Image 1 (cartoon, rainbow, N blue to C red):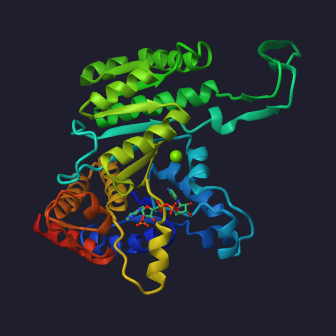
Image 2 (image 1 turned 120 degrees about the vertical axis):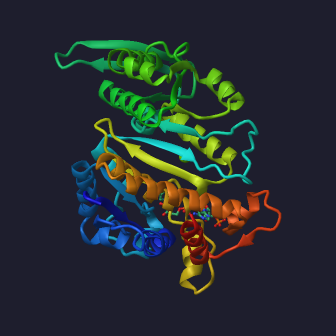
Length: 396
Ligand code: NAP
Ligand code: MG
């Protein structure tokens, strides 16, 4: 390696797996270079969360990061870790600094059959991560009265739109988005489609929301034509817009193998649907891509708290490390591409094949065995599963 990866360590069971993966699957095989940031909750608290900001800035500097799952503090965590403050979600902080879009794709393995039988290739969901209902203003209407949308420009001029004349109790909600954020989202999606040579689908409800959703559609179309159309045509990939309800029907009938860009709420709902239909959250990869071409790889699942507490009690755990290993391989492959080190990218490919082959050969963790069609799976504990992957890797 020439350029270091930005390494963001994390919490609980995934922190344990993190070290095992480095010891068993990375350090014996590659000259691993990382710039290490400890995003474990205790260290975030010590540094007043500065370490999260520093790690995001380092990612901007070097271009590629790999992140372990981290705790997003809540009331219970305040007591458990004696926190000074209820620090914000590290993923939210990093996403805000990198201005990125999150792409989630399942890892497909023979013997783990998607509920939708015709899905033979992965479907990648790209979720817009800013605004709409996640930054809303809401009022419970107590009784009769008039609700309006009012925009006051800097010069004081006002634009008004009637929402509803209430004859009794009701509810209203105001949501927004910005041209900048939608444009960044569009560029991240077009860039990622080119990067992975997959078609890009985008869906909204522009027939009903003629200004709000229609603006999303228009921005995507404009950026596509001005900046990406030629590259798409040269690669033989397609940009395709359709209504969200039509998209759902087409996605279910498809064989997969494309990126589905969704507005914030649609992405929240559809990513859980797609993850579940492919089999298991522990087999979902996730990468944050900024419009400037910076990448942060991680597993889609959390810190697997329940397994960690068993581990602390000295009980055996069978936690699936595949998505975390794929975060490393994604980052190493990208580093290899950027720095022109084909051996590094080849190692990443081989390690991924080793993970898949190990499970296809019948060795797996408990949760995988529950959804696998394998007749007599060998259920391994967390460390033995990683060691089994190492044996497969050595054979490959
Ligand atoms: P979680 O860590 O994803 O785990 C939920 C359950 O899913 C587990 O209890 C386990 O089920 C199963 N599971 C998830 N990953 C697994 C794996 N690799 N192998 C085997 N089973 C797996 O979600 P959570 O328990 O709701 O959240 C725990 C912490 O993670 C929270 O503090 C949350 O803030 C944080 N979190 C972080 C991220 C991130 O950093 N990206 C994302 C989500 C959540 P069983 O217990 O039934 O075996
Ligand atoms: Mg959700």
